[in-house]
Length: 195
Ligand code: FE
Image (tube, rainbow, N blue to C red; front, side):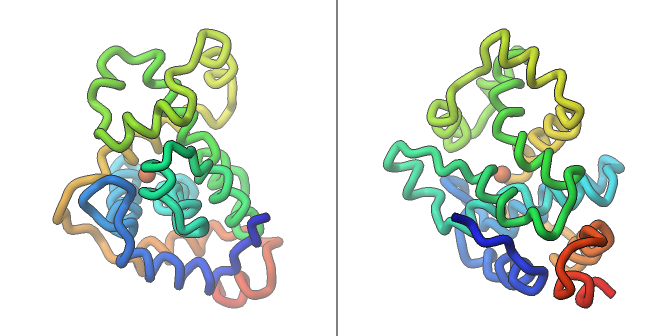
């Protein structure tokens, strides 16, 4: 059971993520999140999709898993944990691309020649745990999802966001963008911080 995050908890979780390594890669979770968000911003994505890029791996932070699960051959289902943690704060335009970013990898492996071969070692290892490339029926169902295009875009930024030592705008820049898309009906805590 994952408790939905409040805005202050989300902020502190992201701030603390500078101290944890992004599973199997040589950068921190925070660097990976900021690089993903910057890729989205430079591509002209909406504030909601930039926010999804920033938060796509929050499930790793919430669960405190990652390398250990991977090493043990367990899929941590971080995309589902992330959505459960963020559902009080954000709407579908943020949550759906996060929910689908692992499926988007499986989709691209099935549909784009060379995509699987270009994955990092850690990403290739987790692919096997996540079910491998999609079959034809899964590809059709994924492509029919209204959020498929956003999820594939997020996936490509995720793949690019593993550059050691790359400078990005600070977390505060992306938190300000994220505040713009906090659900109007979310808890008083989130609204009072976003005011
Ligand atoms: Fe990621």
